[in-house]
Image 1 (cartoon, one colour):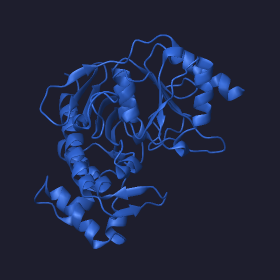
Image 2: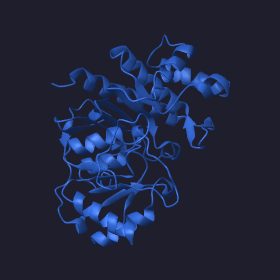
Image 3: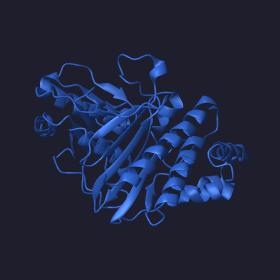
Length: 330
């Protein structure tokens, strides 16, 4: 199968990272640092990136990795108990690891320039959701010649069905390879992955929205105006992280909008979308920017050539783009 080793390494890596994150979450206290942009970052962010980058470095030593974190704060400003907890969490997976080794693994993910072949990792997408005990994700994707080829996504708090399953069913992992479809498996057991597919809804008015929990991440007003033009009456499902992509990929929602807020010039980061976008596309959906242009992963860390992100089940995509353009022009 194409990318056989890559898919195996990626799927195992995000699940190991999810195990570390859940271990940290179960014992989370006040050990939350603040990054320069004031979003919270915890031992889990650093530990997750360390485990994933270690796996990639070992299996594919020549592949650059564009990740969200670096070890600078750990080496200088972090309290000793944060460094000690990080080392303990990573040693649960790699008993021989030293602090310096862990810092180096984290920094393996500090590439920034585009390469013909590279990985991008978000060790915790939705850190605020993680801190609240809500939805978060671990996301990893391989990009070759500007094209998403492998995507692995872990959602440790996402149940098998968002609206039906009990809390004890929480924890799902997703894997996609371009041209090979997308699958889902529970984290709690060794069940074989099962194929997933986007919904077959063709009537935009019967579609369901999912969007960012935090309004500062996306324009809820423009999304609401778009929904009105499409005739959608159902309330949007607002959750953190790339779990929204998983909802579209497995047919629980038809539309995910990530729209720039008026007056802002925010440019999307590739690690926030790469894995989820491929999982939606491999499951039968469509992902573009808000103007209908394909996402362009050839500009290093940023989606410089794109504005916003629209992910749909596929059949309603053109209707959503048209309604969004009309709402934006109104």
